[in-house]
Image 1 (tube, rainbow, N blue to C red):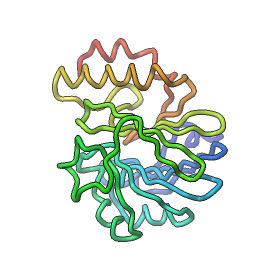
Image 2 (cartoon, helix red, strand yellow):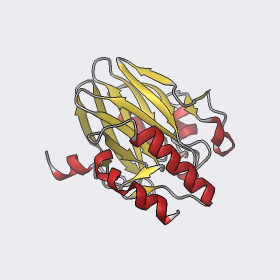
Image 3 (cartoon, rainbow, N blue to C red):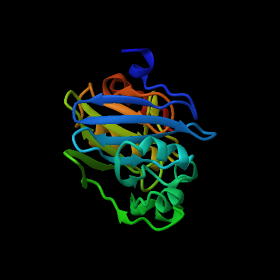
Length: 219
């Protein structure tokens, strides 16, 4: 496996990267001036797919969907840099978009479905579980699925290599740490791949030793 396949590194507005794990294929691309990651998660048995974060460059996302049967867009959160392709993909190819109610005022149009913690989305034979971890925003979501060899977690701006995403108050910092510890690190093994909203990938095992330091630094 080459270094890019291991790290998940993709160049902004460059070629996408595919990772397969039995029943699941993960296509990663980076778009826009803030190098937002967009993921197309598809079932290798049926071709059914889900877009995670319609950030920008709808024409590029359409190309990345061309060999799949897309079901919907799901949003990790409602910050402006993650949502700019929603309207275009709603028009063509006609995708609904789903998000948490906590960020509803940020979206350019009302979500077609509100997602809550514990919801399960069926994509062909895949199950994608919704995890709500507020703190970066009130409606921040993570999406978890299982391949043949490991779990795959799409963390938006809630979890990156080296820490959680930006928080603006001490209360939000405590909230995001509580959520990460109880809903993510307590339930997932070290082999779990983590796919953030920007930048390279990581694993739960690589980040687990640093939880105490993240909480202590207070942001």
